[in-house]
Amino acid sequence: MWRIVHAGITACVMAVVMSALSSPAAGATTTIKAGRLVDGFGRVIPNAVIVIDNDRITSVGSAPAPAGAEVIDLSRYTVIPGMIDAHTHMTYFWDPASGGRPLGQPRRPAGVTTVLAADNARRTLEAGVTTVRDLGASNEIDYAMRDLINMGRMVGPRMFVAGQGLSAGRGGGPNPDLFRQQAEARIAAGSDWVKIFGSRGSFQSVETTQTVTFDEMKAAVDAAHARNHRVAIHSYGPSGVKDAVRAGADSVEHGIDLDDDTLADMVKRGTVWVPTIDHNRYYVDAKDEYGFAPEAIPALQAYIEKNLESARRAVKAGVKIAMGSDAVFSMFGQNTRELSWFVKAGMTPAQALAAATTIPAALLDREHELGAIAAGYLADIVAVDGDPLTDVNVLIQKVRWVMKGGAVVVDHTRTR
Image 1 (cartoon, rainbow, N blue to C red):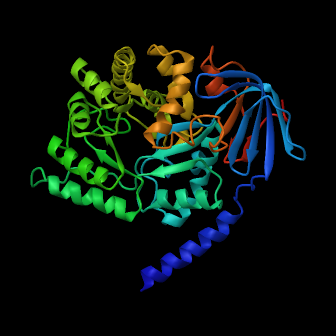
Image 2: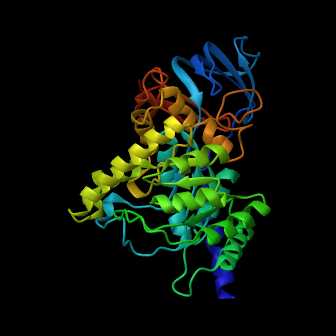
Image 3: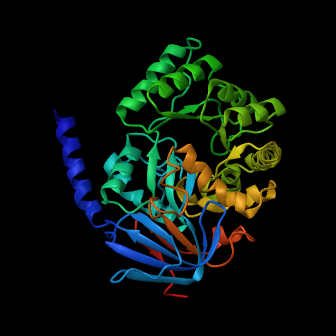
């Protein structure tokens, strides 16, 4: 009984606290005047006029603003669709001023972590990311953040969440039926996606040992697909990626040394690869924050190079690639730095932008309302200072204004 009462008190406290962080309500009709529009479908429209009714775009063109509409002048900027980060861990909060390290923090009540993680949500919006797929959290904190954001009680990106990831059991051998049951349980609990940890590898460890068998992956994938849910499979090494693709995973996370057969199979099946190259760059840069041993750094750097080389080959092969930061702790706000690695791998800036918009929108099964600026789509719009089709760094360093669902959530235009 106490657990039930305590959970109810926590929920009430959270609701009261989060009300102070509520997103401003979207106006009835808003018109944006953009100096240049990159719409997500390959069109570039100068002097574009975007009309928004509540949270949806109603028209895109050059017609004058409707009478009485609020007008937002972004004529100095290029406007792009709100970007999508396909791999985050939004609930991993750390305060650098705490004196501790990100790993090994004292346990907090779930309600406290939910409130603190609002800072991660804010920093993600500052990067121009209006939607995330969050792949792994404990204590259903990701469910709470998703729901609070959807209710307008927390300011943050739209979240599609996986809850606790599925991992190999200790001893007893492979157990496909257990993975089927666990996938069903995650969906019943409220997960939008099912996440499977198919190999080792995390933080400073780049171990590639596969830990979940093909049959276990297949059982979980089939169970999720039967319930119209999708599956992401984590694998640091090539064998786990190969099995994940064969098992029908909708996306594969991380991965190095991908062979030609695996890449061809990904193209054939439409599997989306989320290589998360930049997250290991982050661990190298943040080594002192984490207290990583010096001998861990060369292995991280070697993994980055192998990850990048596989990305080069995947780009040439025509694999669908989505931007995923794998952001944790102090990495939020750096979500889009992955795009520079994509250009190094051979993408054009336009292709890199697609990897942050239309490709992940389709992966989320939201390609008719996210990832583009068009009539009927959600009004997720970002203004950047410069031309993102010639310089990918514009997407990373020059976000000036962000609208999510018709509400302005970031505005740095007035201070420049």
